[in-house]
Amino acid sequence: MPHADEHLAAFCSTLPELRAAVTRQGLGKVLDDVLARVRAGHRLQEELPRLGIPADVLRGSDLVLPGMRGRPFGEVYVCPAEACARQVPREPGGPVPAERCWLRDEPLRRRRA
Image (cartoon, rainbow, N blue to C red; front, side, top):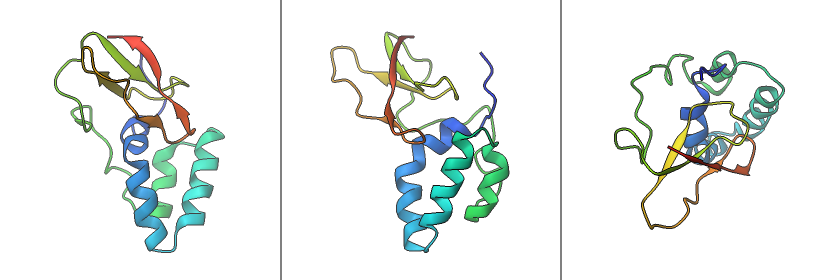
């Protein structure tokens, strides 16, 4: 299923680190505004420059997200709003991933791979 914004999965997976970085730069309120606008339907690509991030930095279908190794199998956890293609695999017999949808501050939803 194609998603409306190709940047959301990469953005969401790096949001905790991004928040720490922009807070150190005094841009915490700008990030909060960007998140509110994205939740309201604005394209992330148009909002990234406000944070000093080039719009194409997260672009690319070959982007490998942290924790992803090849095609997932078994069980994966996905965006609860189906707004992006982010997938966090669960190791067979392992714990449920602690990852969240940082954009919406909700737990990821379980899905079979």
